Structure formats: C-alpha cells, structure tokens
Length: 415
Image (cartoon, rainbow, N blue to C red):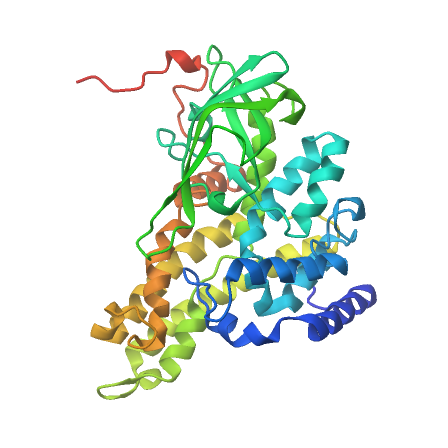
C-alpha cells in the first residue's frame, strides 16, 4: 500500500480542498457533524432542498460526480481522484446520501446499457441532483433472491406493459426516475427470463407507498405497477439479458455502499470520553476500555482494507472484494456499538427527543437503523457466500432451482 499522493493527486487534492473551503454550506456543518446513521436532519432547513442546492453548486463547478465523463455531468477524473474528493468533502458528503443510488448504481448501469441520446439527456441532471433515481429490484416473495422476481413485463407494440410490486425501494418517494428489472419470459430458468428498463416514476400506474420504520423515518417504500407502459427504447440491454445487466448494478451497489458504511466507533469514542459512570469517568473503566480496544482494532482493519482499494485505484487496477468485506464487518459492528452505547446510557437511552435524550438519541436512531444496513446492498449471508465462493474458492451453495423453468418452480411447500 502507498498512502502518499502522487504530484498529480496532490494538485487535485489542493484544488478540491480550496473549492470546498470557499463554497461549502458551513452554516450546516455542526449539525452534519452530529448527524448519525439513521438520523440526518437539519433543524432550520429542509434536508432535501439543502442537498440539492449543494449538489447543483458542485455540478456547476464540475465537482458533482468527478469520475463521470464530462459529457455526462462529470469532470473525467480518475477513480483515485474520486476518492480524494470524497475525503476532502468530509462531513458535507453526508448531503450526498440522497443521491448515492443514482450516482453509484443507476448512473453506471445507464452508461453501460442506455442509448447514447438517453445518456446525454438523463445523466447530467442525475449528476447535478436535479433528478433523483431509485433502484427497483427487491420483491416481497423474493427476499435476497433477485432472480426470483415476479413483476411482469409484456410486449404490446412498441411498449412494454408492467404489472407487479417492488419493496424496500430506498428513496422512491422522492425519485424522478428508476431502473426496473422485470420478468419477460417465465418459461425459462429464472436467471434467463429477465429484462431491465428505466422509467419515469411519475408514469401513470406507478404508486409509491412509504414504509414507516422503527426509527420513525420512512426511507424505504413499496412500489406498485398497474399497467404501466414503458417504451421499448427505454430497455437496458437485450430482452432476456436482464440478469447480466443487474450484475452491473449490483457490483456498483456493493462498491458504493460497502466503501462508506459507518461503524459508529468515532461517535462511541467521543461519547464515552465525556461520560461519567457511577464509579468515575467511563473512559477509565477497564470494561469500557476493553470494548473500545476491540472495536478500535476492527475500525482500523476496515480503514486499512479501504486503503488497499484506494491504492489499487491509484494504480489503475480494479479493486477486489474488499468492499464486500467492509460492509459485512461494519454492519454488524454498527449494531453492536449502538447497543453498547444504549447500555451505558441506561434509562436515558430509551428517550428520543433532543431536549431529553443524552446525545440527542443518536445511538437509539443508530440502533433502530442498523438492521437495515445488514440487509440493504446484500445481506450478511449473501456477502459471506460471495467471499466464500469468489475469494476463498469454496464450493457454491446447492441451488436446486437453477435450471428449472421459472413457472415450474413450486411457490409453496407441501402441507
């Protein structure tokens, strides 16, 4: 690993740092520093409006999605320069959470499979934050099996007619567009009869229903499709090749999410540094220090694993499975850290209001959000399978339905 910038990288870092220093919305800096996973809110402003304004300002100066081609709203920066930008943006990068699906997953899929005229039309406003995109994959009956989807697309002239349901769709309630995977042929094995499209989320027949979460927020949604018409020109990839198209999306999803999953350790360390227990400062308690040491080692391991990816990017190489490992470890760690922090808070840990709760209910919000972190972007079990099969070379899971036509797969067990 090499932690030093090359002269070109140092020059890029200096430019990025200077621009951020001159343009960042400093009035929200303190609130963003205190924002934890599960609660990114602003007291004096609408978070969506602030995020869009910051993204548009970046876009006007060429910083919106630095590694994208210029024609599509980027600046043609290298992968390592993208990482440098993220490092320098720091706390203001939290405002980009609303765009992570569009920038990290939908955009790369559009670049790989959309018609050129569609790339030029849809990608620049996606980069600038003027349009928000979502990813319509998961279904109620499918669980983690994306290929088990039942949403149908039937050809009707130059259009496709869509009927079905998606679930756990992040950000669908404020999305303008989305990428959608459907089943177009039920007579072939489940991985072979899929087709991908992109669509306007305001199309007739699209109904979005937010799902109220345990933490009081509603980031996820159910999305229903009733005779929704999509032009064939909005198909991504060949008919029946949707699984291969989806792999592009999923690969970018794991890179986008896995590289930036919070662990909760910095927040916990800051909390115990100022906490007083019955027998003195928490930071002097041997049991607390043992917990902190354990999590410090894990956080350090994640950090240096990330540095390996950065070094690979700097050399122009493609990173390996490090981001899948990062998400797997960080997701469980986040849940454990939040649970321990609530234990230390005692009875005050159940309070949620900022006027009443210690550290404004930060760890409560973190705990209530953390189970979703272990599901979205690939469950712990899926990631373990990826690591086992693709890194360690272990035998794959037995998949008895792999070569069975989808319409022949039983939908319920015997009584």
